[in-house]
Image 1 (cartoon, rainbow, N blue to C red):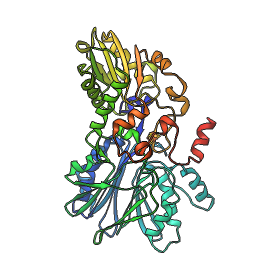
Image 2: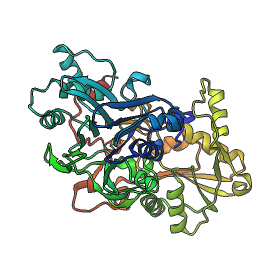
Image 3: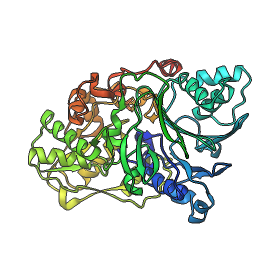
Image 4: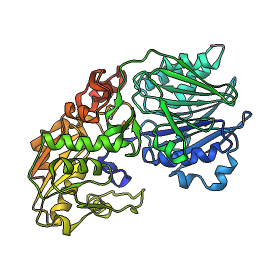
Length: 474
Ligand code: SF4
């Protein structure tokens, strides 16, 4: 699976990454670096809001972090507390109005919100709010959250935030900033990762720990499900809860594909987990071959694991061209085929005349897999055996991952043998769900070891409200 828009027709996309810091004289610049580290989680837009305790300073725009922020822009964002966001839109269209952090003025002052995830009752709440007179300016769930907070009759903002969080169902790793407080919340299932770090005396928050490494912060812990942290510059951090924790259900795809290999989730390094996925895959679906290659970059770790376990050499059979335009558009079939060739090359000297095992992390619609298999064949591969380091994706995600509708997911409508034929492979095998959970290696006391597996098993960790009704009526 690829990570650029050239493959948008056949990929899973992460929705967002969030970053926050409290009490640092260089808050905006550190947030810029933090967002840079989280860029893989969203490439459509970026934004930073800072406060000096009196007013917000805001810059948000469409584009990559380094396109949105010049050094001068960052310097203008004064204040010692900041939140930032990178976004790939799934809920809400790609327009400037939807770029986070969203900023609102309400009766008690300014409020800025940055979220990662997706509410399954977002539309329901929006309709209820509209029926009671709310007027929306964006199409995001984040604005729903702002309206709920603004309409609360609670005496304090903290109580209003807690009441609001208890209305939400779905995935949300959430930062809420005012001029004197930062609230940090994790949904009761902890579907999306969110961690606390420390840089000197400053608390730092990020979707992934790789952002801490980038700015030199030390990891402290992950935000627990149902937890609400309240931070002020003078009083430090207070830990409270808005909900009892429910069964932890971190998105399995964070380990399989989304998170950066140098991030740790629940103390498990992502690269190491992917290597174990590759090892497990080799146990479940060994095949005689001459070389192992991974679809770069996200499948490289699993391919190394497969090679280590089997003794078959790992080779760079596929090379990624990093300089293909991010916004390249491929309206026709012919141009899409060309797009894959621009993006990936097969190394003829490595694969020619060889039996190749091609490791990929998932198959969504199957179109990209077929093109990559064909690239290897055109470069002279004698056999191409495809091994997938996750189970077949059969169900859509409602928690912030842009999968596809069920009828577009190839594994929802085809057997493994049918998929093999469609992608033109000599053999095809997927990792089992049990093998995947075992290989990732999260603590064993929880059922399913604390993973969301819904896109494989259809066991969604929350009620789905209208999301499933819409899906089923398609
Ligand atoms: S449904 Fe799949 S992609 Fe969505 S949160 Fe669950 S495991 Fe992740």
